[in-house]
Image (cartoon, rainbow, N blue to C red; front, side, top):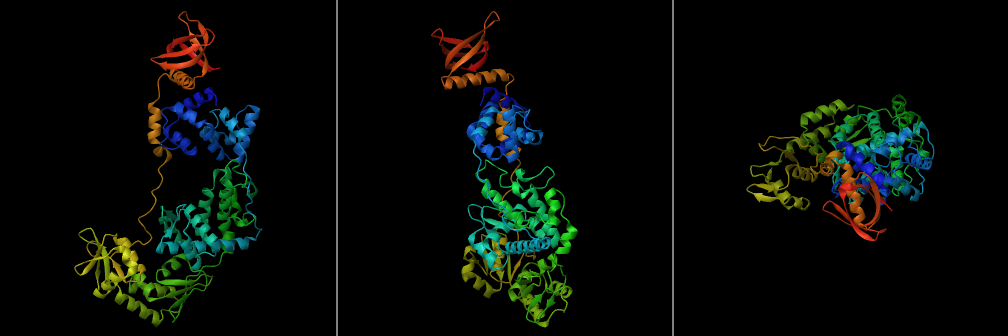
Length: 568
């Protein structure tokens, strides 16, 4: 790093607005709590070799090539990548790489490019079939998560128990598929993560109510938007598969990361296993839209009717329209997921529908509209029985701020000794049970334990709980300018009207700290200048003290007389 580079960068940083500064610090992975005192500290740190090594890991292969060419030729980097390099303080305002960047790049060793997209080519029809399967699997995962949030381990990955649960219920074919589909949902914003769980987001609940084609397109667009900058084209698409492995040549984590990214877009059928996009998705790869007409013609036809049978099952003769499937799942448990799906009604599933706000009349009306064969007598009888049992337990807040469970005495007694409900810490309070746990969590645990329970508000009025809310969501990350606000305010407060004097004092202070020998240009009283070589020894009271090697004497010079400083 040269002093001129550091000074030029400090001067430039001081001219940036808070948004640009925040974006720069964020891009360079600077801690908001770092102990910089002024823009000179910031410039020194950004050009420090250790910090630059981390910055080089973020370089795309195109940026690295442009930097090398500019360094070799002594020119500015090409306009196509200049903006990004300048914004990350790797090149000056004119696009010329800083000397420290050139030194770091010369010493950097590229990582080995991994093998990704190693599968075979496939037909457009086969890709469309995989797209349909991926949408159906992801919908199953969201439905399962809406009932019970998925657990996360410390690394943020899906817990082993939930991975196994998703495979056993048929939502995913393999544990690896479960991991990939959950990652897709998270990237697309359909799942919202906290430190311990994944829950269905509001966007995820809306997604479940859309049709298969719209589901696929929405996720595909979001996955494309979330691809790393190094993989995107200027038109908004993505680079050819063959260029993905080397897109971040100096990032040790890139081989694992690009392998996971390839798995995501392959699982979602945005590409075939060999990395080639299907014909109907080629527009997405170019930055445009998919050929929805062709994709629609290749997807299975969705149906809006089912056969209700005496054995308390419903059979859909094809993929059921998502909105109908979503509501039917609140009444029945789906047993098979094929193009002809089977759903089974049971006392507990119908009871759960009542707990979620359905009534006997609303269920009967829905099923009559949905059925090709009417509502069989056994199913009508189960609905009547569930309606008679519904509301025997009531859960809601009370006047003391506790959650109160009231209702049928026999059921309350059973709840009091139910080992599965011990985490609620229920205690007797007169004829009722009370707990410090929230009404939402208490309701959910009772309903999951197959008790017929009704949610009520503080006045005892029935209400419909939102079962996909967990109350344990990660707060959205604030913008970079907000996260770095304290640091930016501190740096801007350090600005001096005489930047030249501030920089000169900084250079002298560093020379004193290292006992460096420096050459100083001093302005004499008669207006002339004289060069003096000193071993810097002390700085204070507006004066520099050092030993003049040539005369072998110690000199003390006023800072106001020093014009410039150069290392020897």
